[in-house]
Length: 408
Image (cartoon, rainbow, N blue to C red; front, side, top):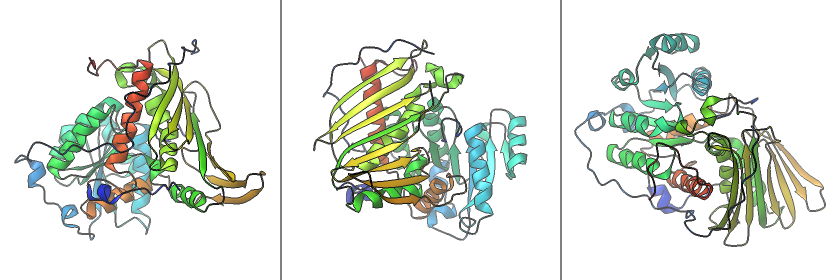
């Protein structure tokens, strides 16, 4: 039976909401493409080792306590970017530093923005120790241990690479990168510099993941036959999300949540066929999309996302003896387990949280102190697999961002 905590020995050795507002354009639907079984991403992509040796840089000279496993000092966390997600993280870090459960892990240290005035105001608002009016200024500060990257999607790769080469660990907001090639470059630098480089896909770190896992593996709904997940918010008014130059579209901003929900549930099953379609905005990015995944054991999964409307944000796991309903896959608040005759077998409320961001931060610190370059909750293999999938979906739609190389 599938389990959410599915990390093999080989993987262990390789060592928003986020996106739309938490409270948070009509076009003709294109003809769905014919089913395609070519170029379907494996659920277990190989991680190509770095081919370049570490250079004599700040990264190799860096010998902070975080590398020796010293748990006596909290890690100094800097935030790259000063937008809404960055504000949520700053609020979280402040709360963590005042919470006995997390105070030994992190110190809210700095923010970097292109505007020095904006950075200063941000630091004052959230009680950060310092601020930088440029990203380079932050990279030059030897006291920065971990950088949380909360900038637009296309900037993630180069900024993460610059941070790691400067000796900093990085926690990168989802999507980790725009495509799998960018992600591989980032992980190659992580290997070369021995810096932690993790994806902040917050749903993979939350206690709700374990709640769902226990409900699935309890056997009460039998063997899984299908999974469905949706996340939609009305967001076409946000220019960042409609601009192809910023990797806009529903898929990379909200569509990754249904896909990750499905991936956590189905376990090691291999995808054998993908049927997918999207509705484009005039700019060419996807306004809404729908995908059906077929797995080698006959299991099916449906993922939908949109930035044209609101939805119930639900996740459904269906089995031979019953089903599980998850309320709000973007930050699951409750899980209901039903028998096949619709009798409610169990209602499980998810534990209270600070903001929800604390779990990914705590996991990153634990991984760094353990000498890992990724988190068990979100392995590098998981990140590569999910980006290979979104690359495949975009290829079927014919959606390539202007800054991406022509695949031909």
